[in-house]
Image 1 (cartoon, rainbow, N blue to C red):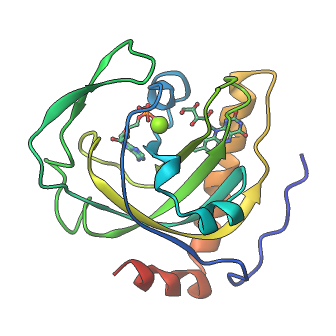
Image 2 (tube, protein in one colour):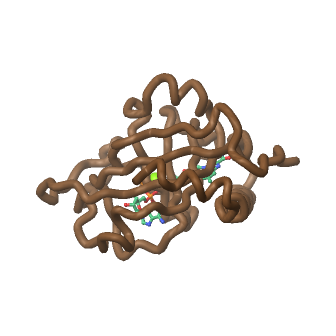
Length: 186
Ligand code: ADP
Ligand code: RBF
Ligand code: MG
């Protein structure tokens, strides 16, 4: 696929800010089948105006995870198969993993490769976390569009494209004009 050119500076309609949403459980495939974990956020939590701009596709920007002051508990996945431990971000280090602005790539859509029946919004954060943080709060700012969501003939092809998305995000988020928007989350 030829990839759309990403502008040197963020241009309208970006930045799109989505404050104070929550990390929920998806199907659990990100880590297990792809090796790329994604923090899923409820699509219903994304304001309608933001969702109009963030049509389906792959995006990049900054995010911030905040520990939620709630007791740890388990929740059943939406498909009812497994229980997920909601630690709410307990165990994340303040200023290192939590309450710090981190780079991310994001996918919004129907995950055509997996033929999902529900729209998902998920962020892969370019950071090594010490543990899962289901139930934590998360805010993010989207600064640009990378490509449309696609179906693939193989899992390897999907992974290869996600790795190219990550490389693009790293390249553009290193530029001053993109770094400037980190403050939006402070
Ligand atoms: P699910 O389908 O439930 O979202 P994933 O396999 O995508 O399952 O795993 C997602 C979880 O992994 C996230 O909710 C988060 O708690 C954790 N996680 C660990 N590292 C990362 C990371 N770098 N980016 C996003 N989520 C991460
Ligand atoms: N899924 C697709 O079916 N097609 C895609 O083009 C696609 N692109 C993605 C790009 C990024 C940066 C990320 C993080 C995920 C993408 N996914 C895509 C979603 C992937 O299928 C999903 O993360 C797993 O199903 C786990 O939830
Ligand atoms: Mg996920």
